[in-house]
Image 1 (cartoon, rainbow, N blue to C red):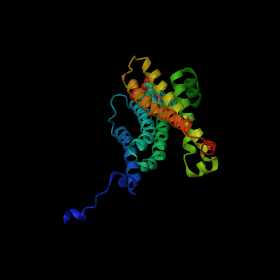
Image 2 (image 1 turned 60 degrees about the vertical axis):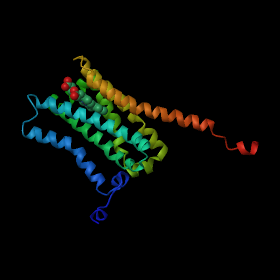
Image 3 (image 1 turned 90 degrees about the vertical axis):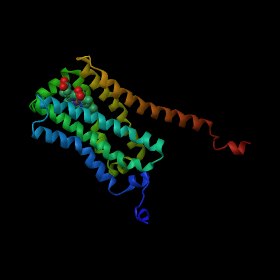
Image 4 (image 1 turned 45 degrees about the vertical axis):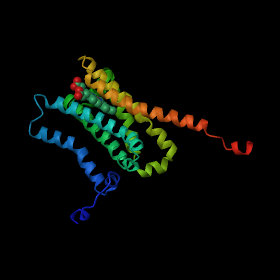
Length: 224
Ligand code: HEM
C-alpha cells in the first residue's frame, strides 16, 4: 500500500523534471561558491591569487569536457532529454573562463590593459588561452534561441563547430603552461578525455557518411 503511494520516476523522467535545470545550475555554481568562500575566509593556501587563477582555469576545462560529453551520452544512453542541459553547461564554460581571465587580469596584471596586451603578445601560452577566450565569446553570445533563429540552423551549427578548435587550444594552453615544469600527468588525462569525446564524433561522422553512400538513391526503385 505504502509502496503504491511512492511515485517511481525513471531516470529519463527525472531529466525532464522542472527542478532538473535549477538543480544543475546550483551544482555548477558550487566551484564558484567554494572559491568565493575560500577567498573570503583565507583558506586558499599560501598563494590565493595563484590558486584562484589555476582553479578557474581547471573549472573552465572541466566544464568544456562536460559540455562536450552531453551529445555522446545522449546518443549512447538514448536519453534525448540530456540535450536540455547543453546550453547551460556551455554558458558555464564561459562563466568560468571570464572568472579565469578576470583573476589573471586582476592578480597578475593589476588590471593594467597595456601590460595585459604586452603579456599576451610575449607569452605564447597566454596568447593561446586568450584565443580560446575570444573564440568562446561568439558561441556564448549566440547560445540563445533568438540568435539561432536569426542565424539559421546551418550557420549556427557551423559556428558552434568552433568548440572543437577551442578544445584543442585549451589543451595546448594547459600543455604549454605545464611544459616549463615538465608536469604532464593532468594534461594527459584531459587530452585522453577530449580525444575520446572528439574521436566519438569523428566515428559518427564516418558512420553516417558510409550509411548515406550505401543507401539507394532517389531513382533506385524506378531503375529496377
Ligand atoms: C578556453 C580558455 C582557457 C582554458 C580552458 C584555460 C585553462 C587553464 C588551465 C587548465 C590552467 C592550468 C591550471 C592548473 O595548473 O591547474 C590555466 C592556467 C592559466 N591560464 Fe588559462 N585557460 C583559458 C584561457 C586563459 C586566458 C584567456 C588567460 C589570460 C589571458 C589565461 C591565463 C592563464 C594563466 C596566467 C594561468 C596560470 C599560469 C601559472 O600559474 O603559471 N587562460 N588555464
